[in-house]
Image (cartoon, rainbow, N blue to C red; front, side):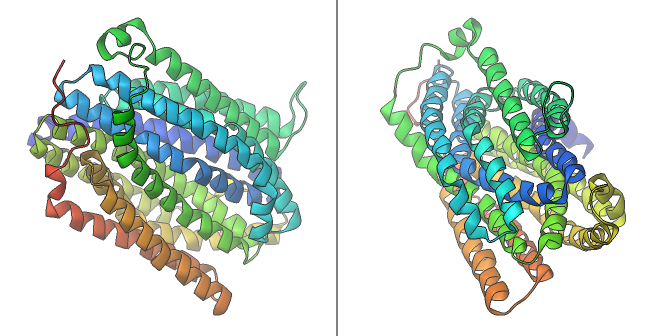
Amino acid sequence: MLRRWSQPNGYRQVLAVGLPLVVSFGTTSLIHFTDRVFLANYSVNAIAAALPAGIASFLSICFFMGVVSYVNVFVAQYVGAGAFQRVGASLWQGIYFSLASALFLASLYFVAEPIFAFAGHHPEVMRLEVIYFRILTLGAGAVVMATTLSCFFSGRGLTRPVMLVNLAGAALNIPLDYILINGVGWFPEMGIAGAALATVASQVLVLLLFALAVFTRGHDRCFAVRRARAWDGGLMRRMLRYGLPGGVQFFLDILVFTFFVFMVGRLGRAELAATNIVMAINTLSFMPMIGMSVAVSTLVGQAIGAGKPSGGVRATSSTLHIALAYMGLVALAFVFLPRELLYFFHSEHADAASQARMLELGVELLRFVAVYSLFDAMALVYMGALKGAGDIMFVMWTMALACLGMVIAPMLLGVELLGLGLYYIWGCVTFYVVVLGLVFRWRYGRGLWQNMRVIEATGAAD
C-alpha cells in the first residue's frame, strides 16, 4: 500500500484527480439535501413532493447528461494520445448537443400534470410536485451545458476548477433556499417553488463560471476551444456512437430509482416521506462515489489513449480500495447512527405520531442502504473503468436487463398483484445494486476493455 501511494495511477494520483470531483458531486448532493432539509421543516407535503419531482426532473436530464459526459472520455483519450487540438472540437460537439437538449427539456413544462397524475399521489402532494418539476425543467439546459464544459477540465485530470465552480453554486443555493422558501425581507414566502428557483439560480451560476474559465485565449491556443467550433460530422457521429449508450445507461440507472420512489408513493405518505429522507441521506454519501467513477474513467481513458492499459488497471484497483474504505465507513454510520442522521429532517410542523412513524421507518430503511453500499461503490468504480475504455455497450445492456428484470417487473408483480409492501420494494433495489456490482466486476476481470478506444487510431499528436 505504501508503494502504491506514490506510483503512477496510485492512491495519490487518484485522490488528486478524484477528491475535487468528490467535492463537486458532493455539492450537487448538498444542493438537493439543503432543499429537502428546508422543505422538511416547512411542511410534510413539501418534503413528500420534493423527491418524486426532483427525481423525475433529474430523470429527464440524465439521458442528455449521460451523452455529453462522454466528452470526458474523448478529452481524456485525446490528451493521452497527445492530440491536444482535438480537445476543442470534442467540446464543441458536446455544446451543440447541449443546445438541442435544452429546447427539448424546456418543453417538458407542458406535460408535468399528466406525469404526476399517473403517479396517483395525494392531490396536494401532486400539486407541489408539478410546481417543483416545471421550474427545474426550465433550467435543466444549464445543467447539461455545464456538464459539457466541465469535461474540458475533468478529462485532462484538472479537477480543481470543477470543484471550485460547483462550490460556488452550492454557496449560492443555501442562503437562497432559506430566503425563498420561508420568505425573508422583501422576498415572499414561496415554499417548494422557492426551493426550485434557488436550485436553478445556482445551476445558472455554475454554467457562467465554467464558460468564463474554459473560453480563454490560453486554452484556445493550446486546445482550440474557440477555433474548433465548426461542426465535425465524423467526430459527432463517433461521440454519439459512444455517448448515446452512455445516456441510455444513465437514464436507466435513474429510472430504477424514479420508478422505485413512485411505487413507494402508492403505499402512503409516511412511507414516501421516510423513503425521501433516507434517499436524501443516501444521495449525500453516494454522489461522491460518482466523482470517483469519473476520476477512474479519466485515468483509464488517458492510459488507453497513451497505449498503456496497464496504467488503467492500476488506477482502477487504487480507486476501488479508496471507494470501499469510504463506503465501509458510511455503511457503519447508517447502522450505528441512524437516528442522528435522521434528526436533520425533524419537522416542527408534523404531529408527534407522524414523526415517530417516519423515524421508525427511516431507521429500518437505512439498514437496506448499509447492505448495498459496498456493492454500489464496486459497481461505480468498475463501470467507470469500462466506460473510460469504451466498453459502453455492455454497460448499457446490463443496466437495461437488470432494470427490467430485477426492479420494474418484480415491483409491479409484488405491489400491484401480490400486495407486498415497503420492505419488499427496498429489497428489490438492494438486490439490483448487488448484482450490478458483481456483473461489472466480472466484465472488468475479463480484460476485453484493454484493447478498446473511442478516438480515431490515426490521429496524429500535435
